Amino acid sequence: MGYKGMKFEQSGFDATEYNRRFHLNQAEYIRIRLRCVLLYHQGQEFEAISCKLGPHHQTVRKHVNTFISGGFEQLCQQDVRPQESLLTDEQAACFKQAPLDKRPEQVGLEGNIWTGQLMCQYLLQTYGVSYKSGIYDLLERLNLSHQKAHSDYGNADPVRQAAFLNDPKGTLLEADERTAVVKYDEFSVCERPTSHYGWAGKNTRPRVVTDEKKGCAPTGCWP
Image 1 (tube, helix red, strand yellow):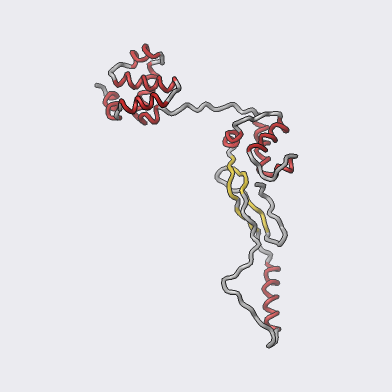
Image 2 (cartoon, one colour):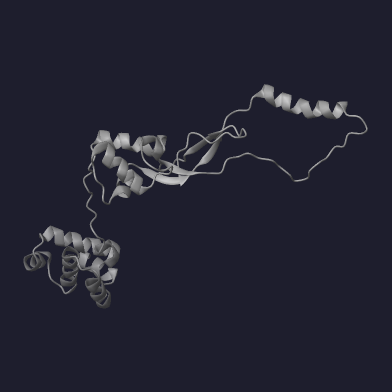
């Protein structure tokens, strides 16, 4: 037994697991891989397996090496064939900016949140391209994900900060004995906006630009 044969036996070929995998996988190309490994386990050489099953002997060798390195799990992994995009590179780049910069209602669609269905409508009306499925594969290729935004606060105005502090200070200093001072313990008032979810590039987070003014809606993040 050669070195490869020894490595193969060490990988632990199990007939019960082979039968389970064979019946579980209906795709013929995966079953051919399994048959190659079975025949090699039975002592046949690469060339003989190639003549019996059809694949080139180097392909048979590749299947055996795959089994040695990853067992049945790796051997039975399905091939993922990338689908051709229906958009040109320029169109895809322009489409990517839509969920990043605009609300659906700003591009003539009914809605405030970008969903897969609205994106399909946008692609159809803008580029004449119909996506019946695969919109999320397109978003994956464009490196976009739907995630929680974080608030982005600007630097405070030092003049307004000083005025805010001086106002209560002056009120207290000028107060007479009839003035009551009320103190709230563990009490805070905050106008921080509710966090939104929005589309952004992977490993980044959409921002909500806010100065926390009363009645000021968050800007800069379109969920």
